Structure formats: C-alpha cells, structure tokens
Image: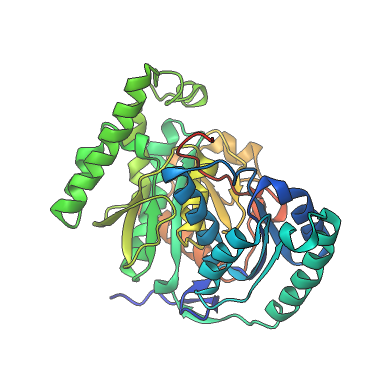
Length: 388
C-alpha cells in the first residue's frame, strides 16, 4: 500500500479517528429542542444536533431515525455526547448505544424533572460543561491517512460538475483509497442510467446486484406515484447549467467516486466494516445525504458544485469544490478549493486531485473550512415514512 503520509487527528477509544473534537448536544425529539438550544447557547464548545421528529414513527422509519441519532453520536468527530430526551427509557437506549463506542455520554430527560424544560436546561448545562472541560484535554496525534473516512456529495450541479469538479473529487478519493482509507457517495436516484457502469466496478456479483436493485427500487417507487423526475431531478438549476436528463446528470455524478472497486452498498447511516469505496442507498437531497454519511461515521466531506451551494454538514467539515470560473470568483467565501484551472486547460485533473488531497489532509488536521467559519453546518434527518 503506498505511503501517503499522515494527518493530525483525535484517536478515540474504539480505535477510530476524528478530524474534529465536538461535544454533541443531541436533541432526540422535537419536544426538547428548546431546552437543547438553551444548553448549546450557554455552553461554549458544544455542537447542537436537533431533530423535530421522534414521536409517532414506526417500522423502517423509526429504525432509520434511531440509527441516525446513534450514528451521529458515535461519529469519531464527536468526543462526548449529551443526550437530551423526553422519556428516560428511549434516551437511555440511545445513550447506551452511543456509549458502547467508548466515549463519555450524559443523559438528561424531561421524565427526570417533572416536565420542566427550564430545569432540564439547567441540568443539561452542568453536564455539558463537564463534558466540554474533559474533551478540551484531548490532543491531536499523528494518524495514517488510512484512518480517514470521507463522504462525497454534489449539489447545484451543472455541466462543469461532470466535466471537471466530480472527476477532480474522484481523483482525490482514488488517492485516499490507495492509502487504505474509506469513502462513500450516495444519491441513489443519480445512479439512474449509469448503474451498469457502477455494477462493473463492484467487488463481488452480490454488490453489483445490490447496486442495480437499489436504483430499480427507487425508480419504481417514483413511477408508482406518477411523479415526473423532469424539472425535479435534474432540478431547474441543473437544467440552467446545461444538464438535460437524469442519465446525463448521473454520468457526471458517479465520477465523484473515482475509479476504485466498490466494496459495499450501505443502508442509511450504516457504518462500513472495511476500507475502500462504498455507496449509500439514500436520498439525493444534499442535507439528508450528508447526514446519512455523517451517521455512518464519515469524518470529512467533499462537496462539488457548479453554480454554488452553501450547505455544509455540521458534524464533519465540508470542503466546497468548484471548477466553474464565475462561481469561484463570485463565491470567494464559500468555495474552499478552486479547480477552475482545469477548465482553462492550465492544470490536469490528476495534478489538481493531488492538490485537493493535500487540502483534505490539512482540513483533517484542523484547518477550518468556510462553512465552519460562517456556521453553515446543519444535520437533516432522513425520513422513510409518515408518522402515526
């Protein structure tokens, strides 16, 4: 395996490595979001992740919801977690699943304070403050690039995405995979028309079938409702940027995954069990897609864009990449990596990919992204069904 050097990360109790050292205030249900916000505003060094859902869910939707909560709490970028819940039983179940990763977890619930939101906030502030103090003692250490797990996304894509930005991201991902690292891309509907190409790269026939089946299920679900993808995917911003069909968009979109074999098809928020490139069967909407990656353990995101897209993940630093010259010029405080020299013919994609890989290394070691500086990050929980 080639030696691609190291980065300075946070080694966790379970052996995984984070690029950040968050103390997460994890609000499990909309009933406690106000209290959770007060806790996060009061305690410096905390990161709030709140979902408006959490009651009335059933079946797969409930399973996926809890898997996202637990996965975000277990993400290696999180040093410790304050779980804020309504009922003690559910909060304990989620807290225990997070604590199994070896990180400190505290739990506060409305059950314990006679439904008093202010008392819940006061108790949570004290717990969060202690967690932050302990987390601040954790130091970065040198870690091989094989310990990095990167999610790859594209949004507000145009013709330049498929021509330059996505192949550029793919070149950097190839280097990471060669180093023994993990990567994942998703947006299942944006494999449509290109699934046969992905299937050819599957490490096993079973993975190839799972890829094709994932696309077929999503296409059939859309068709069953009578919904027309035209004007929705590609969206209006994609069409303005020169993308005419979902097949054309897909051929550009899959380039962001590079060229290496695909080692698995992950469910939403499923953690990969081996190194290499994976795909996630999940929604194409970027905020949901990125949360799926973070809940599966991704510690850094690459996000390519044509026209520009300010959304970033909260738990994992998100590098915005564009090769479109006017986007780079108009959005100097959004685009982290300028690849416009590719379109101008002044730089080849492999060379730009190596530059991007070095930015990945620097960001993993603590260099801030524009999204972090401007507080653009958020988490958007994926729903797979309606509520009772």
